[in-house]
Length: 89
Image (cartoon, rainbow, N blue to C red):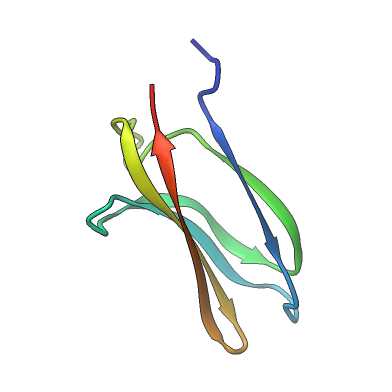
């Protein structure tokens, strides 16, 4: 119906020296990687990206709980942040 068909993922990256690799990935609750929402490099700042509920193959995921994982390669090693998100129709 075109209403509420995306989620906007907002995040802040702080105290980075230059641009570093950053990815946002979706996993099911068993830990299986379903796809990347965003991948690239980013510096310190506030960011927002939209996700339409599709996996890496472009298929719409079924309703349920999923893990959203932000990974950033910092000068001190990899840093991760994870959140559980709910996908409903």
